[in-house]
Image (cartoon, rainbow, N blue to C red; front, top):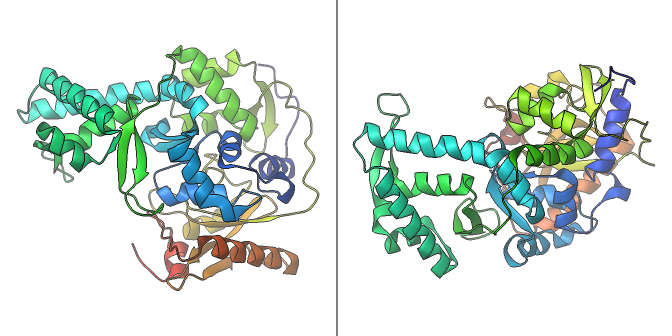
Length: 397
């Protein structure tokens, strides 16, 4: 990788973000699959985030729920699975093998070792017993198609066994075999989260067998995942890349070399883009507004966010754990936050000093009305609300 050759300033970084993350009016997507492909992965810890993130980027947002449910549960063209940083994401199905080999396998090894260690500490059954339960559970799931943890436990009673976790620590608790084992199987790519119980906002769900995919070389998979993410989010610093992937620095550097990444410069220092992406990128024809949900992949895309999130806004928009709340965007930067009230109406607030002007406020209000329209009678409350979420929505977690 060569010495930094060109400085990419804040204005151009915002222009790239608006176009590549489908926030510009002319860049809106025609399907949930197009959105997921453009963003590489959607945060799936909060089920509502997936739908809201897709709806904010569709040319026809009224079709958000129907089209997203089709993609997730009928066509299986999108899959919710554990991946980077022990977090649940939604990936295009074609990318699941890459996510699994590049990231999930390492996470899975730690998860299984941790489970067996915790079980041994409290005299729970051993690895042979756990393997028997695992194979039985997978057989039951293959027969049922989809099932909740409780339904699986009725068929395989050993899943109900409970043991102490984190003994002697302040967060010591009793865990069932099902809760820990299903998480391990998820990170190992054997099961995925299926249809929710209730509406699309529900955090309770069924399990299903994971779609079959080829086993890939870990190094090649890391290179492919980084190439795709850098094409969507470049330029990005080494810190950004390490944070987003959860990889070791050595793995990040090896993947950068493997794809022939080009070094450029941003305000924070050296950064990288994919080969052929060094040239200047023009901004959209017109500035655009967007209301993005908490944990949106754009809002959470980079570790260093000053170029699109002013430091003075962080206290209102980010919770103590580092989760970003629902945000209002204008022309490639975060300018405020929003929430849905109990009566269904959208409440939003601009936080930047001096405001954003009448044009921007009118565009934000149009986005809010559009979101209110496609949500209909659905009420959305984030699982990880930021301070402004709570204030605008009139609720506490």
